[in-house]
Length: 137
Image (cartoon, rainbow, N blue to C red):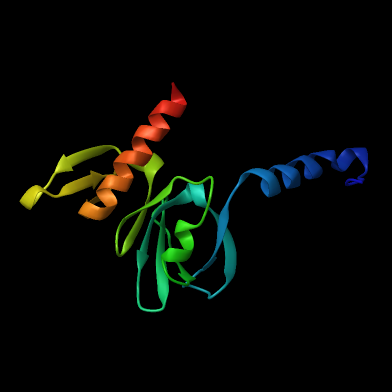
């Protein structure tokens, strides 16, 4: 069983198969027109907690909202999203550097912003970074 298409539309089958198989995405709400769409997790820079919504900022500096707490985004597998404190999830692939901040806190630097990592999540971040480095070797 499979998808049968006219040979001229074969490229559509390939695109659809790739989209369904490889990427994790989340449903977001565009605040300008209140439309819902799906956003690929690789396009996300940061997810920040708000009252009953979460604010999603993309690498293109676009802002979206999504329903639900940050805990539901921790369950996304095969993504580079990692929680760094109680209110923030960041894309691990977009981290440029680490700094020791004020009062011995760990700071994560991206191209545009710096984020403070809590002690609890710093340990998890270091473990994930070391696991990713082992996989690359």
